[in-house]
Image (cartoon, rainbow, N blue to C red; front, side):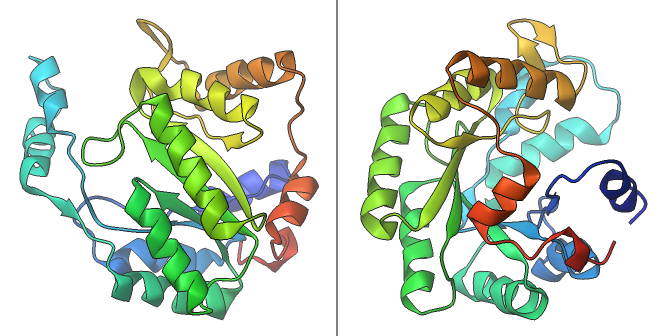
Length: 244
């Protein structure tokens, strides 16, 4: 609540609040910020997975903080839980109660089918915004064939009722974002997904990555949606209906 009002005051962007939280949080801890802010959008993971970031511990010999290697290593025996019960809990308490719509994060093919089940139960209404995620150990690998297949299955499950986006971890970030754009989809970049702007060069900021991918999008002959166009396509409640 210290920074959300500042962002809103300076631009008209759609602000999406995470419900992923930190590894090991309960569902109530993960929802706490969104329930206070009542945002237009929030992320929602559509299935459990082995969220393995422990291989990163082998890449470094020096650490800034003592807790860092221990935190990475604990993911060797960690499951990021997103059960049907906790997903329904988020849909009811944040979606229905606040009018918040979701970015449905799908790390693997089965997560699309989990989403379809909730759609069939009438708990999720179109248009759906599906974020397809690649390159996280425990989820779908960063193989372009996986992107093509998941996009095809989403089309079979949801017809024309969905918007879709792609994110990929690490060095796969920009290539997968570009592929999504060429396929008529949307995309995500940012330091959460990759620390680099190009091979071996750390990004100075999220904005630097956004500037780079915007240039690629426009070079492909596409344009970036305005906030109001995004709100219309995703059927959002509007920036005047949030609690910040």
